Image (cartoon, rainbow, N blue to C red):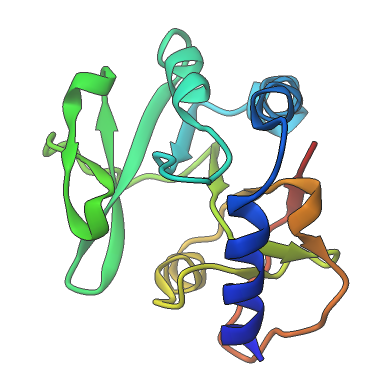
Length: 172
């Protein structure tokens, strides 16, 4: 079921119209979110392809917060602090990854901005199927916010015992 939903909503996401307008709405909601405002550190993915844009969010947060982006190490994701977008280079799955060695070890007062192909109304997500974020969340209790376009916010129940839901989903 997850593979069918993954394929379906990748196609949906690839064909969404007015992405710039939708990204702007999501951006405003994220920067005005109370959990985000009260956090010291933002853990955030670097968007690519048809994902909700996070580049503008990263640039915004770099001015006032500690920002860390994920890197895959031994089938797990670790987050590393960056000072600018220049601290990123193409890595695993052609995703921009940090080149810095400043690994986040203390997740106190952090928020994790989490990617997903689609999310259901309960906060469960379908990602790319590798389980990186589920493993991360099972090891770290952290406030997680999923980002997705409204077209990818679905009613289906697809979660299994390994899935860990985000605390909230922000969409346009």
